[in-house]
Length: 257
View 1: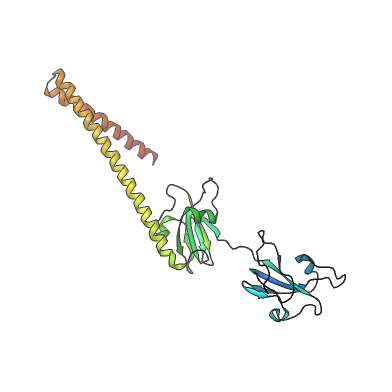
View 2: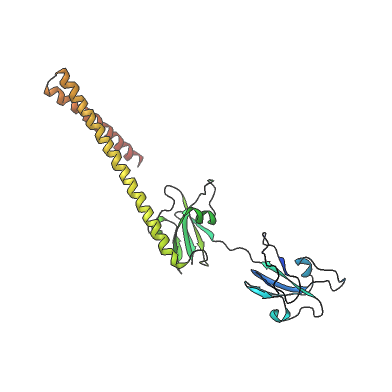
């Protein structure tokens, strides 16, 4: 006979078998004890009250029979029994480093955004939703939390990153690490190419602007009929002005360094 085995939403101990020989699935520690008080014969309803009397327990993550046979002993022979399940804490990967720092981890290291969509510190679950690069640190012990450590993949361009450690290698199978990394390496390459194309387009726009200004100057000078020498001088003024602007920008960058 099978009892209800719904896990308490707050991870509190819950009654999973009302009487002996029922079975339930307990994701944690299953406790076997009396269902009525030996002193007053009153029904025991809570885990804490049952633990006032002698009990036995077993770690389990599967179906378990609430019986002396399965537990190996009867804590109080002659009394009716019941079972409670004490849920084990939910496991989650731990935050191990900010971008640029060392992450001590012997399992899977996750690399992703430091902020969630609400601009708050991203949790591990946030990172799983936003996207991440991942590597198996093996027994290396330490991984630098940078894009370079993850084949230059950048799952959050122009944003601060962080790293999480999953020592148990629970959340991502080893077979999926390769495809995940291939995806982010490709995405990063595409982003870099898009940036380069944008720079080229901006340079082409500037060149077209200079050419238009030069053509306009030559046209104006020709119309006024100052002669070929004056037209050349006027066009040089355009070049000189642009060269002076570029020189000023170069000096500014050198000073900032």
